[in-house]
Image (cartoon, rainbow, N blue to C red; front, side):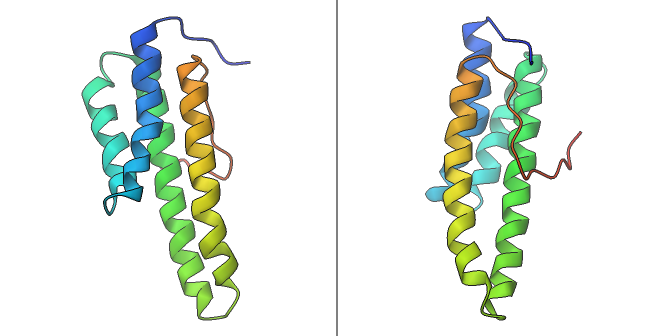
Length: 117
């Protein structure tokens, strides 16, 4: 069981680390830029934001890699399913992570490669 964060501002910024990734639906690479901006601004002020920012960035990098692999697999006619499935799951998990962070929980994404420690 993870520690629950009580500070309302810290929880809000933690939530924004995750939900800012949804900018990727509007602008290219917004899914990386949004969490990176929030993480960079608040990582020294809040340990929860530093943790959740790294988790969000790691997940978004992982999703980008999965999408690239799916794009290559389309040439083999097996990647079309994954090319549609990966973004759908990414959006659901991102929203779930935002809700959990707003509740003050340290969220860990499944299928996440942890590049940033």
